[in-house]
Each structure stands twice: as C-alpha cells, then as structure tokens.
Length: 83
Image (cartoon, rainbow, N blue to C red; front, top):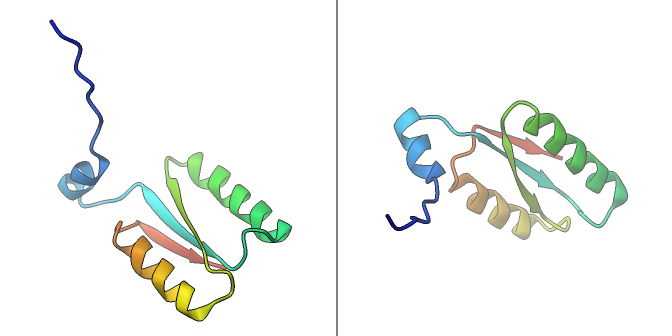
C-alpha cells in the first residue's frame, strides 16, 4: 500500500465542531522587545491550553491594523487579543 501524505484539515474540523483552536493576537510593533516578549508569553500560555496563536503586527499604523484584523478574522479565531 502506498503511503499517503495526509494533512489534517483544521479548518474543516473547526466547521464540524463549530469551534476554533486558534486565538488572534494583534500587537503594535514586533521589533519592540516588550511586545516580542508579550507575544511569546501569550503563545506559551495559549499553547499550554491547546490553542495556536495567530499573530499580526501593525507597526502602529491604523490602516495596517484594520488590514491585519480583517485577515485574522477570516480564520475565525476563538478569541482576539489586542495590545
């Protein structure tokens, strides 16, 4: 039997369960050590609870913030953290 390269489709599973295992995190400036450490801590805490962090950095631009939020929300996360 040939080995299949199966890849779990989390989006399909989320549709079936009507839940998501991801949390969106939007930060102002990833190059800022404070926000980088904050993002790392959030990711570690969420990972310990079975969540995956979807990260977006806005560069302190309102236009970029809107674009990042729109894109992240397309993934229907279970929650959203704005910093």
